Length: 155
View 1: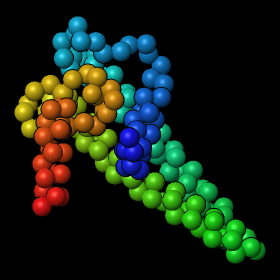
View 2 (view 1 turned 30 degrees about the vertical axis):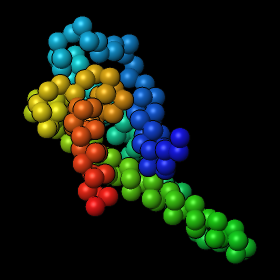
View 3 (view 1 turned 120 degrees about the horizontal axis):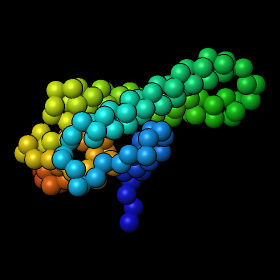
C-alpha cells in the first residue's frame, strides 16, 4: 500500500519523538488514573525533549547554510546543493509548525486539558498520545474528521 510522502514524514516525526531518551524508566500505564501528575510530567518531558531536539536541528541547519557559500565550480554540483538546501528548508518549515503544536500541547498540560479530545472531551488514550504526543482528537474523532475532509475534497 502506497502511503505517500506526508504519511512517511509523519511517521519519521513520530519515530523521532519516541527515540528521545527521557532518562526515566517510567512509562504511563492504563492501570493508573488517566493524566495523573506522573503522566503529565512524562508527557511534558517528552514534548520538551522533542522540541529541544528540533531546535538543535534548526541550529545545525543554520550553521550548514552559512558554511556553504555556493563556491562550487561545477553547475551540476551547485544545482544539487541548492536542491538539498531547499529540501532542508522545507523540512525545517514543517518542524517549525510542529514546534507550534508542541507549544500548544504544553499549554494544554498547564491548563489541564491535555490528553482529552477537543471534540468529545473523552480521554484520547495513552497509546495514541505516546504515538502522537501533540494529538488533540481521539482516534475515533480524528477518523471522523478525516472522513469529512475526504468528502469535502471529493465534492
